[in-house]
Length: 130
Image (cartoon, rainbow, N blue to C red; front, side, top):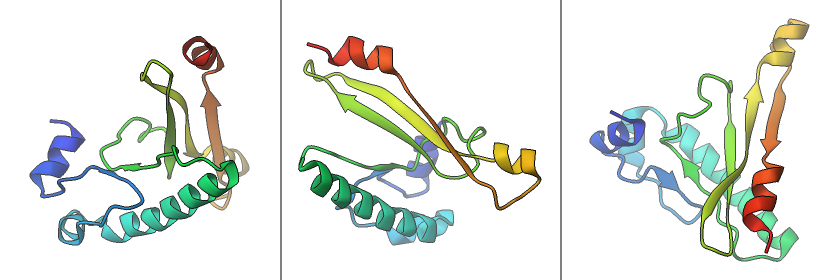
C-alpha cells in the first residue's frame, strides 16, 4: 500500500492541500498531524501570496502533498518539489530540495541546518524552450 492509500483509509480524503483548502481537522488529528499541517498551511499561504505579488502572476499554484514519501529518508525536515506545466500541458518536475543534517553532523551541532536543492536545467531547456 502507498501513503496516499493509507491516508485515505484513515479518513484523510485530500492528500494534496492548496492555500484555499479547509483542513479536515478530525482526520488530521487522528493521524497526529493536524498542528503540523496547520503550520504548513500558514507558510503555504504566505509564500503563495508573496510569489503572486512579487511576480505579478496569478497562475502560480502551490500545494502541500501529505502523501509525499520521496526524500523522506534523505531530508531531515521540510522538503519541496517544484513542477512546471509547459506549452504542451506536460507537468514536469523541475526542482526539489529540503533540509539535511549534513552540516550539523560535520560541525557536531544540532543547531546547524542546511537547505539543499537542485534544478534540472537540461530538462527545463528541453521541455520549455519553444
